[in-house]
Length: 487
Ligand code: HEM
Image (cartoon, rainbow, N blue to C red; front, side, top):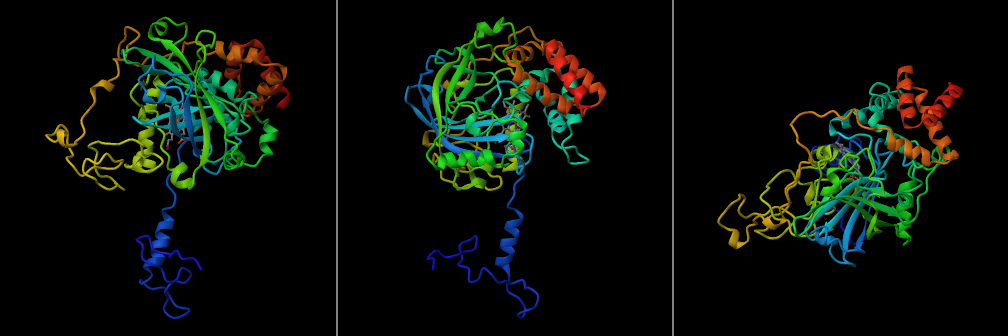
């Protein structure tokens, strides 16, 4: 018999966990059943809202090790010294499906990292693709609505998916990646990760550098065809990661950055803050800076992976954002999602809590933690709760001016207004990617597109063919000819 006592949620020993209290052997239950009520009530609250996107995912802990110091570019404390190690929590995900959808959808994969640095948590909330479908946050809800299930039938709707893309040529580059032979990663270990956005570093001299993250899989890229994906277990990617780590076969990625100076950004041929474009490696080579290894599974999927809260606004001194309009929108969206999905004090949960002292004047809210006085803790302090105050010398927190970011440049003579970027070049990089593909890759890409596009209206098909044609005449011709044979 186990020595561990079964208790109520408040620690009282429980006499019987099989039988409720009833009036006689066959009678109704009574109000004395507070323990049964506790169980049923807690059970009703076992779920929190799933993430509105990236609902299906899997997480693990690991280590980031610096292999090249970035001291000349940033004051970020975790990037200073070769050999320096920082604990990381990673979560990989699909985007469009719900929590119990397949790991093998043709969908981008989320690649989110939380670095527990000694100056606070830094989150790199990226994808397995270097670009995205959009370049303005105002479009994100429309885009996601068009890709998720139809509101009436609750079924996938390829007509709506392609209607969105027909109206947004800015998506063509990412669409070409998604429909290509790289559209379904064989596992989370076999894909790269990208910040996609441009962020900024700043150094001790107050110089700013624009940069992008690239995490290159040391396992190599492996992908599945549509048929292979359909025949694979829907939980396969999760199982692959958990089992590899349990068996000590730790997956790893080589971390690289591309760096652009402020001067280079001024007159570079493409807008460096346009999330639908890559920075060509010939102009901005990849610089290796570290190794990421995942080496510990979570103990409790719900407590850790499900309640993990990643936010592009979780930044540390030395790393800032950029004028990318998508990124700016994300600075609001994630914290707001966490307050709704997990709660006002989500950052006190162990997976989200910083490993360094957290001292602030925010108070209360659901599930507020305990209250040491000026205690350098990760929870709320019971000391003075306003700033400024007269207790700075006795331990009340005060701001640290040397971590002030250098002023953000405005790279143009600007008015505050809505700027339409519809006239931009949406086609060159998509065309370049198409021309890089071999025959079989071109076949795979255009067949996958044709199979979906054939289900859209004629007007949508027509507008999509114009887009493919602007990228490369052969791209459009192939899609058109396969559609004709599929009809
Ligand atoms: C303005 C555009 C975007 C908006 C409004 C947005 C919004 C969101 C929201 C609300 C969540 C759920 C957060 C949660 O409940 O914890 C989420 C998750 C996520 N997003 Fe975005 N997103 C945008 C663009 C992007 C882009 C461009 C990327 C990649 C470069 C990205 C990567 C991710 C990842 C990886 C997750 C899952 C994080 C996790 O594992 O918990 N998102 N997004």
